[in-house]
Image 1 (cartoon, helix red, strand yellow):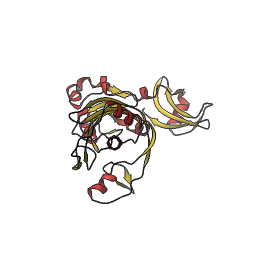
Image 2: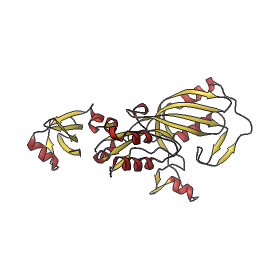
Image 3: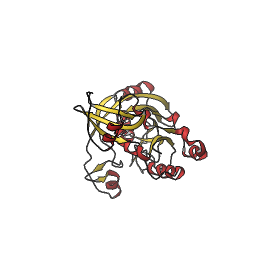
Image 4: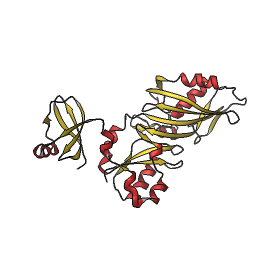
Amino acid sequence: MDKILLINKDIGITSQGVVSRVKKLLNEPKAGHTGTLDPMASGVLPILLGKATKLSKYFVEHNKRYIATLLLDKKSSTGDLEGQIIANKDESTQINKEKVEEVLNSFIGKQKQTPSIYSAIKVNGKKLYEYARNGEEVDIPEREIEIYDIKLIDIDYDKKEITFEAFVSKGTYIRTLCEDIAEKLGTVGMMVKLVRTTVNDFKIEDSITLEELENNLDNVDKYLIDPEMLFESYGRIDLDERKKDLFYNGVKLTFELEDGLYNIYSDNKYLGLGTIKEKLLKRDILFI
């Protein structure tokens, strides 16, 4: 089952927990996700099955879109609801739509971001949240991120909550973004809700929950995506029988084509992916 399955992850389950559940439901021993969603977050979680797990490297660079809710005047140790409240302003911050939109727009573009100590980024071979749990101090390197667009969705003045949509590059931490937005508004803040609505071209409306998957196992094929569909925009190379055997055995083949990634076919059957560099085609991922 060398396919891709889009799961709409529920709140309260880990990304790895979703993978384990999918493996059991589909009786597929090999599966993995393409990017962790925290237990308190919900939304699109692409699951790679079988040989499609080899595609994970192509998901690293994918952009993502989120809808987040920021609570003002409270700050937690983790930047979200899972941590302890470490700051609580007695007086409510006065905000208005114009000011909030001005602050949100100020984040559009490339910038440096310091991830939370509770993130899964590795420093010196150990995940940051492991340092946090052990009470250890560690220098957290800044990362360059880009926020392509950010839009205000709603302000709940009574609850002091701001809901916004953000279209961001890989490596962007929305919890940190929420804290930074609150700081520019002259207060503290924490993320109280997060939904990932897209991962590159994968959309939440095309995903299913684990419950829906369990109730539709007899028709699961309609939810599975062929890896070939992801690379429709790339070039195509057709191999005859002799070249196919050479390709399978790892032999580099000469083609007068530009460098890049190509879909490989033989006898009109999809074999997988290959890369051309300096006129030489090299095997990358095989699905047959």
